[in-house]
Structure formats: structure tokens, C-alpha cells
Amino acid sequence: MRKDAYHFHVRNAAMDKTLKYETIIKELLEEYAANKKTLTPDVKSQLIFDAENHQYQLLSVGWHGHKYIYVTAFHLAIEDEKVWIYQNNTEAMIADELIERGVLQSDIVLGFVAPSARIYSGFAVA
Image (cartoon, rainbow, N blue to C red; front, side, top):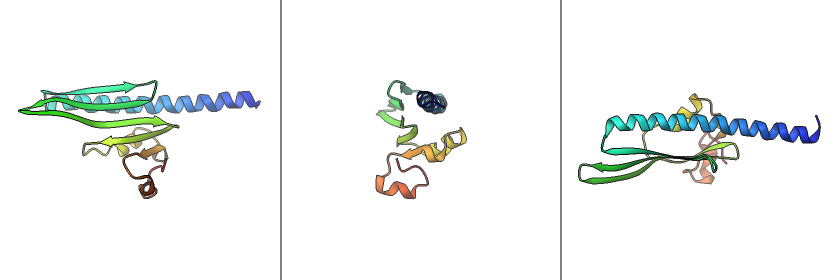
């Protein structure tokens, strides 16, 4: 294989992986957003998808009785072909759900875990 053909193939494989992971993340967050609507109707789910920078968030915003709610339920990103979980303010095991949907465990980084402790997480270090 010629050098330029090889680089084209590698670049396309990375784009395919990124697109696959993006689709998985979007579908998963959309399902969580739909479920949230039925639990607390006055607290709205807001999905934020920045496809250009590969950033994905699910926010909960609204009033629960007399208390104002603004929570980042999930913040995920795709960086260097890995799914970074930056925030999970739920009891959901989002990493396990990503694996069940086709994300490789070795491609998941727990961004909220200190870099020095990630080696013990069972997931990617970075």
C-alpha cells in the first residue's frame, strides 16, 4: 500500500470510529433525556451536542418545588478516538452502558478520576 493510501485508510478508520462513538453517545443521552421528562416534568432536560468539537452534555434545568435546579447530569467528549467521561452526576453506570453499546473499554477514560489513579480504574489512562 502506498504511503498516501495508508494515511487515507488510517484517517478514515479514525473518522469511522469517532462517528460510531458519537452515535452511541447521542442515542444514550437522548434516552436519558426522554426518561427524565417523565420523572420531574418541571425540570427540563437539555441536550447539548457540539459535533465539531465532539462535546456532549445532558443538563437538568428548572424548578422542583421552590428549588431551582441546574445540574450537568453527564458531560462526555471524544478526544483522540477515546470517549472521555468528564462528569456523571447520576447513579447510572454510564461507562458500562457505553461498553454494552459497542465502545471498547480500552477507549473509555474516566476524566473525573485523577490521572495518577486511572491505572487502577480498569479503563484507559488517557
